[in-house]
Amino acid sequence: MPRWRKLERERLIAARMAMPAAERARHTEAVVRELDRLLPVDPGTVVSVYWPIRGEPDLRAWMAAAHARGLRVALPVAVALGQALSFREWRPGAPMARGLWNIPFPAEGAEVVPTAVIAPLVGFDAACYRLGYGGGFFDRTLHGLASKPLVIGVGYPQQRLATIFPQDHDVPMDCIVPGTDPSFTTNGART
Image (tube, rainbow, N blue to C red; front, top):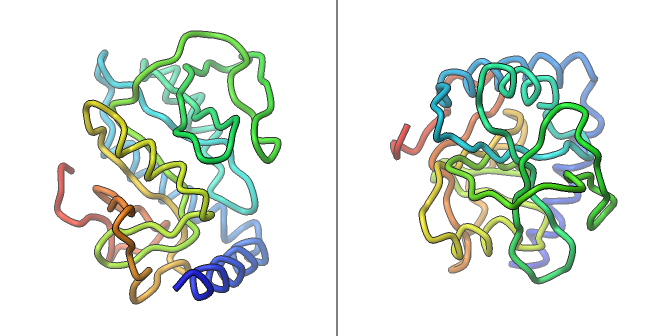
């Protein structure tokens, strides 16, 4: 199974990066509409997003708009392999540092605990399992949180698989938002 996952990751990432920018933008607009529906502004909401890499849906404009509407936005911090993520609150214009794989995160500020986590997908299946990059960061982090947040996977319809062959450590998302594919959004949990 590890070999299959590795090959699928490579195939799906290459396809995602080859997707025309206009098509990625169209899917991202659909993701944003669904996120606005799923995450109403509530003073207690802390939503962890992500800094986009390798053709992932670019939610940076949504992050700024969500912050302006009163949502607390955080970014995950990954500084070492094999460790859980931490989360730091983000604001537009915040000074940024670079973590693993040169991914930006807020350079300063207190760590926060998200009530909602938006995770980018490499692949996904009908049971709302997410195929990620293989580091186990999101699964390890979700297993370790004292209170389970709402977990939303975001990506593109082309990333859908019959199964990701979930492993014991894999944590299913509460819902998947695959761009403009209206036939698939949730596994029925907490939305």
